[in-house]
Image (cartoon, rainbow over all chains, first blue to last red; front, side, top):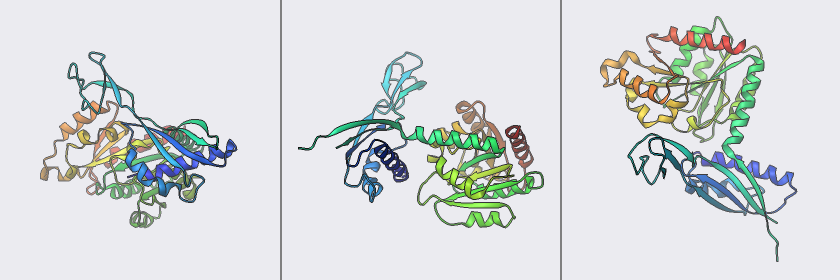
Length: 113
Length: 222
């Protein structure tokens, strides 16, 4: 469980962004988390109240968009979801593939007024 | 009615850490200090290996140690007894170190005239592999009692390190540990890795390990 420490960094980044852009009140923070990233959405949600306590983001809502963990098979070029297919190409059964996406962890946007 | 606006940030949290890590590496290069990030699971003999490494190299270079632990200063005390400069970093529950924490450690230690720093990371084969600390090279220890299946279970860790020390090699006859199988599994994940079997207890393999460090410290300082 390393989500809390990571979320402290996220909160710090967002506070800096808000200050630079003259924003005083934030309503919602939107994160994008890849299925293959080492950050687990439900743990992020669980520690969010602790991470924002006493910061500019206190009382904000959190939204998480999950990005799919997709790969392309190096044998037959099939694009497939690594989690659903359990790391195996559903067409040719190969376990040799390249990750196309899903390792991301992004601060996507904030909703502010 | 309140009017909301959406402000796009599109900032990668890991990218932020990578940039901090690159910056730290640049500073280390300017100061000619070689920082080695040493990772392993708990109980693999990290601290004993660090102590033996200090013993082997302390007469030829200035060494500093960063000890990272969730809590306690047991390891730092053991290192301090050798007279080596040491800082204990408490991660406060965090299971890994990031570049910012490493920078704080480096600043606390002070690296003027220090040639070689070992960062003893938190004992964990998962999270430390994901975060660039800013170290110049990465090493890990796998000890014989842990078993030869670890490269299969923690592939990322074995993929990101430059050196693998296989520790407690003196106990190999008591365990079902297939050294050749480990080498094969690791080379498949990481063809450029250097593998050195050692025993921090008997001293076996430590000269080869010390030579690797000597060479890297020299190259970094050029």
